[in-house]
Amino acid sequence: MDILISARHLTKIYGEGPTKTVAVNNLNLQIKKGEFVAIIGPSGSGKSTLMHILGCLDKPTSGTYFFENKNVSKMSDSQLAQTRNKKIGFVFQFFNLLARTSAIKNVELPLIYSKVDKNQRVKKATTLLKNIDLGDKLASTPSQLSGGQQQKVAIARALVNDPKIIFADEPTGNLDTKSSEEIMKIFKKLNKENRTVVMITHERHIAKNASRIISIRDGRIISDKSGKSIKLAKT
Image 1: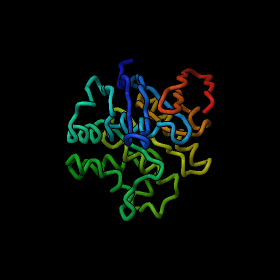
Image 2: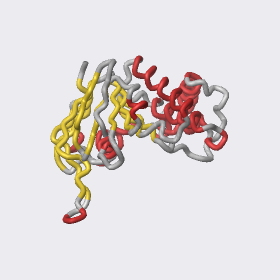
Image 3: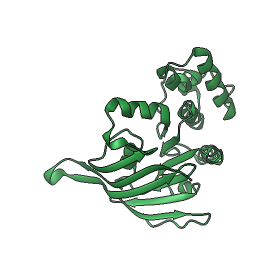
Image 4: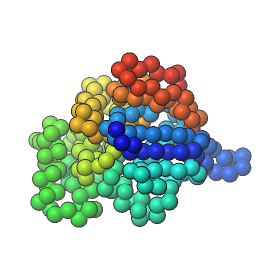
């Protein structure tokens, strides 16, 4: 498989002097196209900071980050925004949906930013929502949907621009057990369709849905396991 992500000596430091915090510490990482990777670690381990860098939401203090063989570390803010919009899909713990906007409009949003024709937007958003059993919820606002349904809308929105990779930050953190299982089934199905998924979580049973698990502590990788029988490092 081709390398999609390559991070070399990645470091992210916040603050200076006594308040300095090293969130990511000289980290090296490669992720191939079509992988389903879970990054697991306790609160404060640096996993979300790492996702923000890999997702082009933030820049490292030092080190290099290549996405599709392009040096993200040297991109301008506008180039980063373009990469996020066209190449990357995000799913967050708190859904980040527009509260007064229908499910279909929430899914269409990235296409509006990309200036896609309205008919194409509606067709694509409708298809995605139907594919995750929300065909009867197109006009529903977030307040009319359950937590699991809201997360499904967020996943459809993340997919609408056909991204190269999906980053999911604690995607089941606000969901009950049944809804969490449904969301994990969607991610596994997407991965079987050869989509690259990187999931941040602190829950071991959620991480086990991935085919590769990277454990992080104090901004460093302490374990990188792949295969069907995965034993997680203690975090």
